Amino acid sequence: MATTNNLERSQKYLGVIMELFNKGSLTARLDSQSAQFDHSDAKTIKVLSVSTTGLGNYEKDVGYPQGAITTSWTPFELAIDRGAKFLLDRIDDDEVLGLTIGRAAQEFTDFNMIPELDAFRFAKYYTGAGKQVSETLHSENILQAFDTAAVHLNSLDVPDASRILYVNQNLELAVRSALSRVYANEGVINTKITSYNGMEIVYVPSKRFQSLIELNTGENDQWGYKADANSRNINFILMYTRSVIQAAKTAKGKFVSADDNPNVDSHTFAFRIFHDAYVIEKLKDGVYASIETPATSVTPS
Image (cartoon, rainbow, N blue to C red):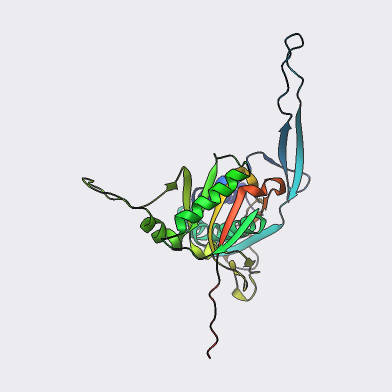
């Protein structure tokens, strides 16, 4: 039987993985703060929606007109159910075992879990965007493209605050080249551009920034995710952060020591996560997505 110590160890490493994910993910900041998990259904979250009436006339003899606040909890299903099981050869020293699993947790999170969840979410942002454009961007037109996106959101009365500009890392040099910079008398030069006209810029590795992705099943040694055959590179996504709902929930991790493992002389650690992301239909105008124009093939004459 699994000991209490093993159960505690399981939760410890599960917590490490989620802590690493929250620190390293490019999208974790958008996880719904107003969401509650439905304890009767492990895959369902309830998201708080609040609306109010507007302004009315103040009458001297009557006072304030009576407004109303309406609240509701909307259920969303976390449709993505992913997991992995790892075997570790028996190690007698608990300290060494802890270091091994800790290192494995770091590798798993940095190179597998973070890229996959980010890629899944970016593809969902693109699919649900209120405005999608196809264009080829370079240093001569990239700032104009950013401005066009911002003006589009402004024209639809999307709040100016709380916007993030996710940009394909392949376009970082184009952004730098587009902005003339002066470094006179500077002891340290830093060409990293982290904001534009008040919008925070977050650069995204191109592999994660795809319009369509496929999640591999883990069968035949095919793990993680890949770009769909019809996917195109996303150039950038300008997003009002409240336009999306997303959440991730981990199932209770499992740790079985080699002493309790009847099949192999190895420790077993299993990790499972439910997650999903949605662009809110009534707030989809707060998401503007630009994708790469496909190369035009030329038929030889």
